[in-house]
Image (cartoon, rainbow, N blue to C red; front, side, top):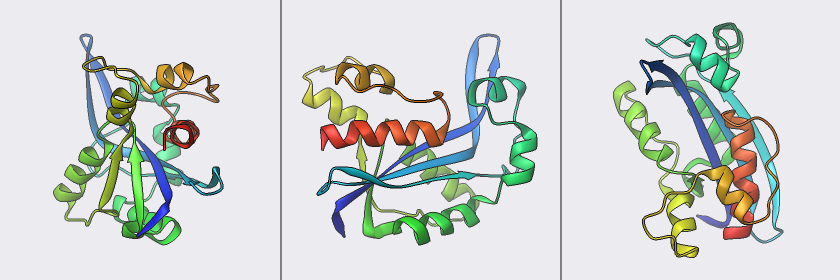
Amino acid sequence: MNHNRVVCFDLEMCCWNENGIGRTGEIIEIGLAEIDLTSGEIVKRAQYYVKPEADEVSQFCTELTGISPRKIEKQGRSLGEVLNSMKKNFGGSNKIYASWGRDDVILQNECAKKGLEMPFREFINLATLFRIQNRLKDKRVGHKVAQEMKGITWEGRQHSGYVDAYNLAKLALVML
């Protein structure tokens, strides 16, 4: 286990807004940004589009994430292929993975439904850690607000897995 490296990741899923109620489906994007805790740098980034097996990318989802059905059709691969690329390029269970919230559970549930192995075993929920470190108790804070609280400028479009993972990596370098 390499404790000097943490892979920050963010998932985007198919999503719908029905009568003001949001719901999500299958994963359509995984963004990753690896940090080196020794050098204090972001050392690697990647973006993978995932072809959902059953769900379709809605207009609402495209507006929120910028991911169109056409982009998924042209650039998407099966979740299994994407997970293999993640393991190959980021070290899989040799690394600690981190997200803002419980993206690990979302990924674990989808892996279980599709008969796939999780690409990692060690996980840090940075949202929970942020609340503990900043004595926020039961108050939930979004990723962008947390970053602003630490004086870190947000870069890029929110709800892009690639952009969100990069911004999370910047925050993680301050937190860890």
